[in-house]
Each structure stands twice: as structure tokens, then as C-alpha cells.
Image 1 (tube, rainbow, N blue to C red):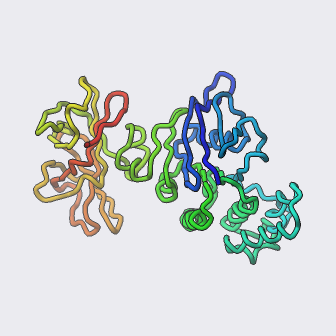
Image 2 (image 1 turned 90 degrees about the vertical axis):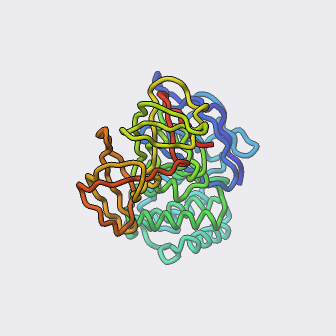
Image 3 (image 1 turned 90 degrees about the horizontal axis):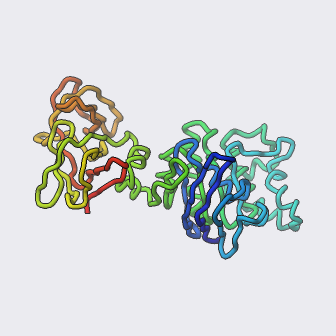
Length: 359
């Protein structure tokens, strides 16, 4: 295993800039997830680490070795692709052995590695089958097994679950987490699915528009987003955003007027920028239906999810927010409700989208 360090890495295709001075330090043994919308550069960044895309600027180090000028087979990493990339005419065993045979690995060593990987992934009974005889989930396990037998310094996984159906994605996601715990090798995983990122990652790298918006643990990214983009992209249902019409002070903390109501926060007012264009952000799980709450509104839509109920509430100025009630909520559309906002979980964003939180 080894650290992966990217220093001011850039990529362009002609006049089109794809990545702009990206830097990060991936620690040995971490499960890092590159998360972001389509076109943000996350897959390109992964392919640059793998050596499948040329680096136009900056450097990439794996351990003590600078690798951005080395061919892929000298970087000590193994790639797992979205489309599995299995050889259809080969058995599972042959698919997993092929790369080792090409570099002249001893036959006994190949057999040991393949058998160990097959046992780890529970595909021992499939070794003599061909890819056409496997399900999507089994093919993905074989693709991962082919990477494992190389005993790489890091695994690079490019949206490996996107071709699976919903239930299989959940099961395979759990298997990936268990695999990482067992082998402890660095994993870098690309996805646009925030659930995959939140459940798998040691740290999440949120990317947008050619650059990194935030790097943090799943709960850091969720609870203290660095920008409005991160706040909107991470979390389901999405964060509520309300334009701030005015700000008052109470014991040094900001009390904002938003949505036609007054909402207290624990954000130091001295930290906030002057001027207009501020926005209040509050997640639905920080906005609870509560008798005697300070925010009043009218229920428009109910989403009953079993363990909780999402309540869409129209505020006095016409803004619509999503709040939470219990799973057995007796509310109905048209009812007047009161909401309580968790002061410590309020966020304010300036006109540039920069976030301000409680101390």
C-alpha cells in the first residue's frame, strides 16, 4: 500500500479545460470516493491516476515514486471498469489469470492468487464458467477479482455499480465495504450517486466544474458543507434554501428573516459578509414538525416513507420547504403546522455560494 498525492494536476483537450489545478493527499488504506455530477472531471481524474489519460500539468506520486510519466503497468494500481471488460471466450479463471500470465508470473503463484481471490469474493464455484453464463453481479465480482490478483498498491473503480439493478447495487455496495475492511488496500471510487459515497467512503472528494469543492468525511460533507453546491448535491431530500431578507442579532448570533419568518441560528453574526444575496440553508432533518414551533406554515404534500414522513410546507411568503414528521404522522394536506428549526444546524451562504456555519 502507498499514499497517492496529486499536486496541481490539470487536464485539457485542446482549448477545453477539464481539470484545473487539482491537489489532494490520499492516505494509504483509505476508501476515497470522487463524487460529482456528470462532466465534472471525476472519471478523467481517476484515469489520470491509472495512466490512461495524459497529465497536462502538475504531478502524481504513488508512494515515493512520481508516476505521471510512467506507463499504466508500472504504476502499481489496478482498474475496475464500469463495463467489466471481461474476455467473453475465456473462463472466469482464465480472465483472472490473464494479466499475471502476461507478466510471467509463476503458474503456482497464479493459481494461489486466483483461488484466494475467488474464496474472498465467493466465486469459487464460477471459475470454469464463461462471462455469458454469469449474472451482472457475478461479472462485477470477477472484474474485482481480476484486480485483486495483481496485489496492487491501490484499486481504482470507475462507477463499478452503475450497470447493476437497484437491489444488487445495495448488496454489492455492502460487499465492497466488507472487502475493503478485509484487505485494507487503498481504494479510489468514482460515482455520481451520493448514497454510494456516503456509505462507502472514508473521505469524499466533492467535485464540480473542473475543481474540488470539498474534501471531508461523509458526515463533515453532510453537516458542514463548504459551499451551496455541496449542500445541494449531498443529501436526500435536498437542503432547503430560503433567500434572506434581513438579519438581526441576538447574543452575537444571527437571527435571519427568511421565508417570511424569523429563524434563529448559532452562526456568529460577526463572521457574515455585509451586503445582500445571502441564503439560509436548512436540511429537512433539522426542520421538525413540533407543537409550539416558531415557524408556521400550511401542509401541501405528504411523503410517507415508513420510518418518517416528509412534509412539504408552504411558508407565509409562499416559499416551500421540506420538513420531517414521525412515521405515523396524522397530518393531511391543508393543515396548519408549526416547525422547529435546529439552531446549530443552520447554514448561511453568500452570493458566491461560500458557506458559514455555527462555531
